[in-house]
Length: 396
Image 1 (spheres, rainbow, N blue to C red):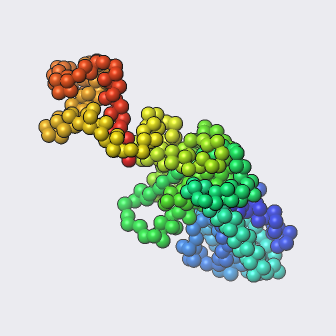
Image 2: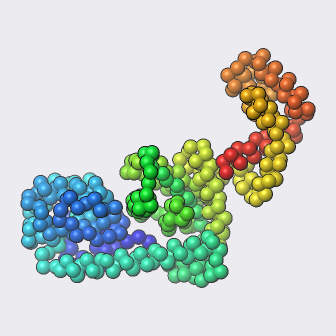
Image 3: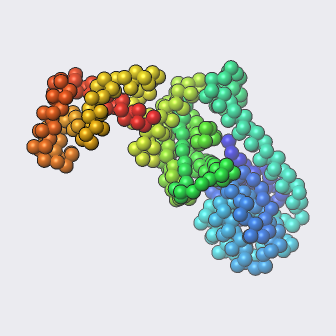
């Protein structure tokens, strides 16, 4: 429920005599702060999403105004209000400046010199504060449901006040990010990254039809998607990842998508499945994974007794794992390929890049070591299940 420039403009344009110089589509940007800026050298404190107001005190000609706005765009500010009539005249805003703003979806306004800076900034700060309070209340309510707190019912009632229907389907998505540059990070730097990513994601989601809420939870960015289909959710998440690669190239981002719930009370289940899908995406180094794509691993996720999984793995494959480790051999891989290739020696040789005589030799040894008929369907199923368990435990 982030505040957009469109909301600000529609509610205050008459009060402060704002004149929009760019098309309406530039008002879709998310606004998260108001910044009084006169000097281009002070922009290092900007994190994105700021609406800047300037008198043009340090700007002496249209060329300097162009550079000023270009710097704001580079720092991902959402717009600029120029207080005209004092240091800057309306004539200073050239067609090149307007084209620069339109090209970058950057909103540009003028405001008469007589309008009080104190009045407009105080008004906008109050609106941002109220919006942040609302966002915090929604986040706390969703977290209460995720944690299954005692006041879940109260949280659901509060969310319904903010137009989240309790009985509609929901889906949790989890985004993990890390810097692609190998560097040590401080807590303040991590928080700054989170703000930057949240602003970028919020702006992207406002352009979609997906009803959503975004929040930080356990050092990841969590999406709560409402009343939508998994195909739409996946397409939206792919859209976000593609744009983040362009506008936030320093980050490596991956997303896990959970399952659809029947209602709000099942959020914790969808979240757990989204985390599992994210873990799978990280393990296979893919950018996105859905819970449905996890196949057999979905069943393993419901097994809470990991000792049982380790026991089954040792029972089925312990002998081979110990032998491979002691002799630096690859009988585990040979058995896996034997199962996946349906026992075809030629296919196994091709998959393992070795001669068919070598494969025949290893298969004979396999049968002796295992002491069972590896051509039996049930036996193969047991071994394949064990291989899945082995991969699942490695992922965890």
